[in-house]
Image 1 (cartoon, chains in turn green, red):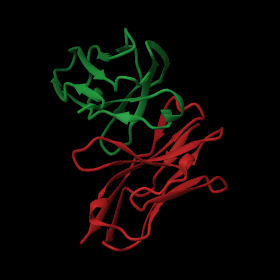
Image 2 (cartoon, each protein chain N blue to C red; image 1 turned 45 degrees about the horizontal axis):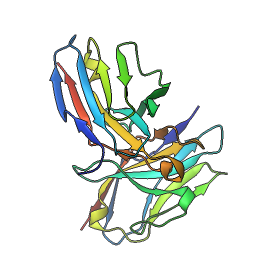
Image 3 (tube, rainbow over the protein chains, first blue to last red; image 1 turned 90 degrees about the horizontal axis):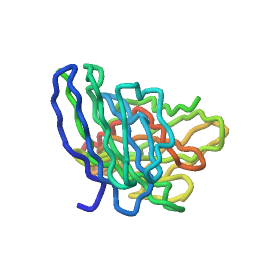
Image 4 (cartoon, each protein chain N blue to C red; image 1 turned 90 degrees about the vertical axis):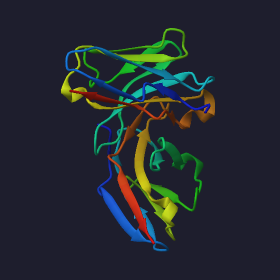
Length: 115
Length: 109
């Protein structure tokens, strides 16, 4: 599968623990996005990168959340001191430069459950 | 503020019937509109975008700026169309997408 890859697919953690998710975008894609999706809702934008630069962060992204894309390839999303309200599907997406950037390619997501 | 509204959580139709999934939006600039689809146990994927004025799998969508709508239509639904459909909006530089809450389409045999 040469699409966007996310790991792990599922994560169960205790409240207060830290978790980290990884996203590997499609290789030539310079933009990478993180979205969060809760039950019954569409994906909500969290942040995006163009190459290694984090260009925008949503107000949804509290201080407990941090995202990196150190070499402009894979990205990590870390949540510190998890809370039950963080339980959601975390989606990563990427798109290529140029005219083809109109389409975002999504990964299968990481489902986080905070108990 | 940017917002995408899909008023129907669930839409059930019989095979062969016409389908219309509603999408309304609010956006301060000139938006780009999309429909994304998620089939069971698959990832979210692009169905169509208004900028291309395309028809994919028999689906079409027309951007109506006066009514701020981008409804998805298909004249004859097929069982394989059963899925979650999300309307999405982006600005001119496509730096992020705003999604509606989705409509589950169920096509009955």
